[in-house]
Length: 612
Image (cartoon, rainbow, N blue to C red; front, side):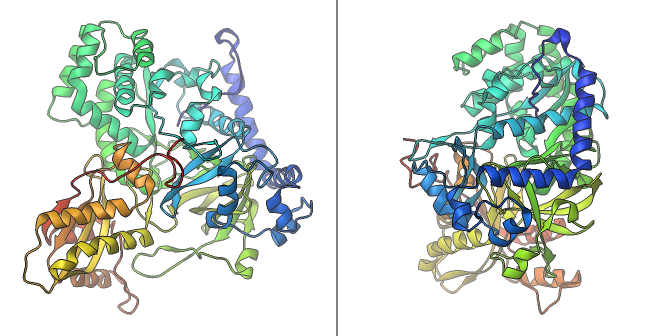
């Protein structure tokens, strides 16, 4: 993920070595004094927000110490503060959650009631995000020297935004960041020298944005030292886009002109400042892209690339084999850990294996607490994270410096922008310590069963969607006896697959169009992040239903029991990831059907007047 520097210097007086040294010293200092920093952060948040409605309502009475805070302020979920969020969204400017004005809402990829969650933020949070970005390259430069001598080819995109009824913008955190002066007017820094001009990143048309960013990246191929995107899925989409459109891109490089499909005048102007006719480069790209195999295409087209900078932790780990294939096993680097709620931490050992990535939480970002997580011993071995906390569980939360090695916790944060003891929903495992600050492996998002891109579908939502679809089978006297699902990322874009075993009582055969209607009904029933991925971002392919032979789910149970699952506790998993199980299911498919069209989606929440 790219980084925004804070220091405004001209190229002539830029002392990179000095700046890197200061940054690394900052990391040393805040991790060595993690508890004191955390105490100060909480005190600062509570002092400045002493009179906000939420803290007054819970009886904090101006106290800013940890003990009182933990005693009187409850641990909260999004649903607990939704009323307050809605009031702010509807235009109430009184000090409800925060003493500073809420500048906009950041739309989370997590959803509530099928709609994106709205995270309040304040102007100064951009400073904190920029600070975290500024830590990344000084850390990286310890492992890969000379990165200041070339460029980064990052595929970065903005997403659609909406306005709340009260007139506040609601948009994803990265869209907010890329549109801010912190990114657009970033001062000189050799580490934020990208092949993509800002205009190509800020183009709202995803095709034109991708095309122009690839064109600039190919044209400057010898200067590229690192490549990346935010998520692994986004980077693979860029490579697949190149597979489809390389002939057009080569034509543009050969002639030094730009395809007329690219109509955005700002994009054309920015790209034409860079692009000059280069027939030799066009011939080289054409020769490489014409070859039968695309293995190692990244190192073939961008020969000086040292690593691929993408998130491959959590559900993104499913993309590691395809990234290895395209990159000739270049290091896959996960640099930072962040969410819409807050930016959290950095990876201090960026060249480690993806399976060993751990993030050091930076104690200045927010006030961190940790809710112990215990595993279920069912076949899915999923973390058991309680919905509502008892009084006793509320007391069990531990501070940053008190977590134990090897234990798992759910992350709970108190932020400068008005979240108090808020459950983020991420499950983390303590992997080690940097001085006094813990380092965490990201284990999973709690309750998520399916994810392709930034979408997160949980079991309850999937169950409701399947229930809605089953209505189409009723006229044929058919029902679903069992089902499971998996995220198929072998197709690009990836797509959801559902395995259905049917119980057929009627004699009338079910026509294919009925199963296609089932696919569409499921898609219509899923949350707005999924539907946006299908309609606007084109990051998710059409949903597929595979009908399996009768008895398939008995075979699945036999297999799970052979692996050690308890017959008494066995429940059909609603999602399967383990390759042999997916193979077993696929070997028993009798027919498959895809959603015939995209589901409905509009920016903003349903109850708003779509962006008015």
